[in-house]
Image 1 (tube, one colour):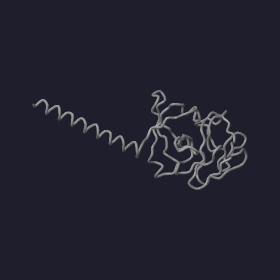
Image 2 (cartoon, helix red, strand yellow; image 1 turned 180 degrees about the vertical axis):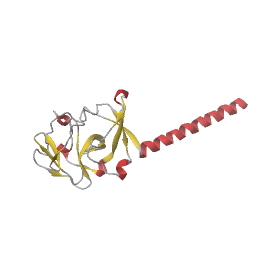
Image 3 (tube, rainbow, N blue to C red; image 1 turned 90 degrees about the vertical axis):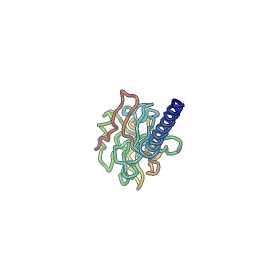
Image 4 (cartoon, rainbow, N blue to C red; image 1 turned 30 degrees about the horizontal axis):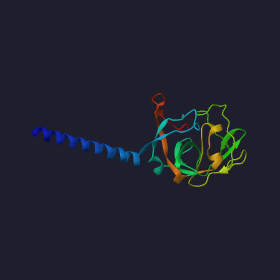
Length: 186
């Protein structure tokens, strides 16, 4: 009888521990951090297809993203998909593509910390070469790092603040690519 009581006590303790751990994980997952899988080559070479990044869900509730932040957001025409891109323009900025380069507020954007000098940027359906656009309040202009193969604000326009999910902060898979996602302008 004593052994059955010990087994029962062990099982109850084990279930309680599991439920507590699951509750803590769920709270963290829902309110603080969430993993996202990079799908596609739009952020190459800085992020690879099938990499996993940890995204901070809280920071954008209290702070606005700034130029250079890598953000995850709901895809413009498909709320079932998430995109990951780099913030190029914040509210009030004027963004222009001229001669294969990006200009923000009429200043050449120095992208040398995350792009090779040979990378050229070209306009799209929304942002045409040589025609500047001003980012409206509560919106952001985002671009993928792989400029030739990225569907981004050049094609479909601004990302509204309410579509933002979070800021990517850490690559955790695969292990050989593990590292902090830094903002080159900070």
